Image 1 (cartoon, one colour):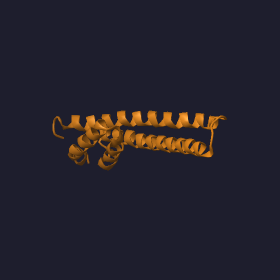
Image 2 (tube, helix red, strand yellow):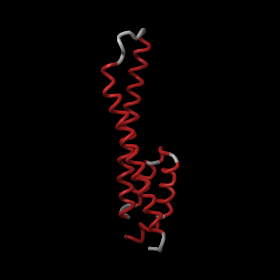
Image 3 (cartoon, helix red, strand yellow):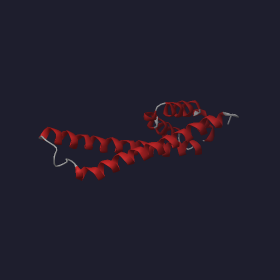
Image 4 (cartoon, rainbow, N blue to C red):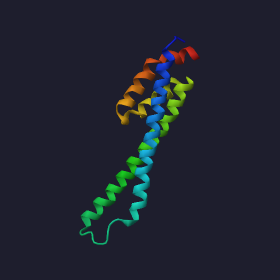
Length: 124
């Protein structure tokens, strides 16, 4: 293993774990808030069927989006752990890709894991 290269892979793994944890928390909050507030919608004074349907569909989309964030976050955390342990390059890269919705941190995770591909081959 080349000296100094381990830092790049570790940074990619740590970024994946941090972003994955963030995605799990945000997705969980989205699902929980939607799940808790769903029985209270529509308010009794809410006029029109169209409004009721839009609230129900918005709640559904928020719950689905939150669920997707939770799944992406779990994959990002598992992939980040794989990167730190130098387990599987494929799993580490998929985890970093699942961190992409976060923006810059996800892009950096993908770049760092991709640049450190040689470390996985050296560990085998």
